[in-house]
Image 1: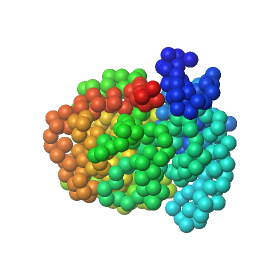
Image 2 (image 1 turned 90 degrees about the horizontal axis):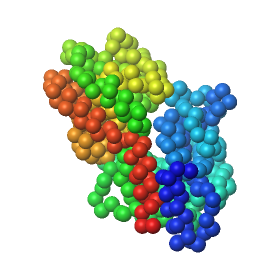
Image 3 (image 1 turned 180 degrees about the vertical axis):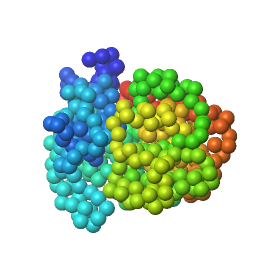
Image 4 (image 1 turned 60 degrees about the horizontal axis):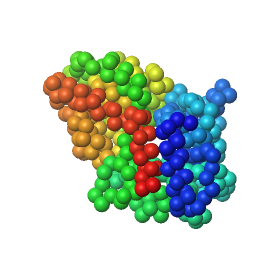
Length: 406
């Protein structure tokens, strides 16, 4: 065990002795409860790539990690990754949820099995980490409160902590209400800084980059310039809630204004065929490319050649693709979601579109094309600020939370 992991173990066990009188264990184990999708690929368990990379980093702090999460039967997306450490074990549960009424009914049917799985795994952990918002996360919060679970808990709320315009599900609002009042007895990491923020709510940057990746990105793109055609990038799930329909209209209007431009769409979803048909109808096939899901190493060349990252999503926490793009000098032009706006203002990069309209995005991009010096300032500031999203800083922040007040 390295020195840092040893410090976290001591912090957790000191608190157990001081507050609860628990028996000190030889090892420190972490139970993660989340809705992260997992699959089987060639006999290996793989999961949503960005989350898997983040959890792999936590093995530096914990000797054993059990991840209670859904296992799907279909083919794994290309973005899925296997865990890099043998110390991470998936405890699979049945998937549930969706937009249709029968999908929501299935959630109720699976609640008893979720409770049984939580009851089996919680007693074996020294620390419980719940990743919200999600249905199983909501169940876990209530279960731990009802059973008076008395060990250390860490909750990560990855969504939009303070939505302004877009209403979100009742279960999300309930989880925020619950976490604000600390009825879970632990600490919470959130996106953004807010008035009257309770002490147990810790503002955190969403990690996604190793130090080697940060170094390589700066080496590859330190001299990047805004050239024509201006290269736009969108990365994420392909659906209207993420604003992909608007992204296509943005590139169409740029072409109509005779602004040389291209668009890379990285990601997939059930609506991809509809978007491909729309691109054909608008005669944009020569400037728009669909890549599907890509593994992490294949994203670097796309980030390197891109100038502007476009995200007209209605609701987000902090999408990791924004910080990944910034590391490569890509300037974000995004919806002015509060936590995203706060972070970009602090870093001094990007453009936040207030009303999230296509015309505003076109105006913002046109302004950057007409002012390459402004784009360059944003690009440099983004590369400088990308270190905030490094795993090294993330591990130090988590360690600080566990050691706080010990």
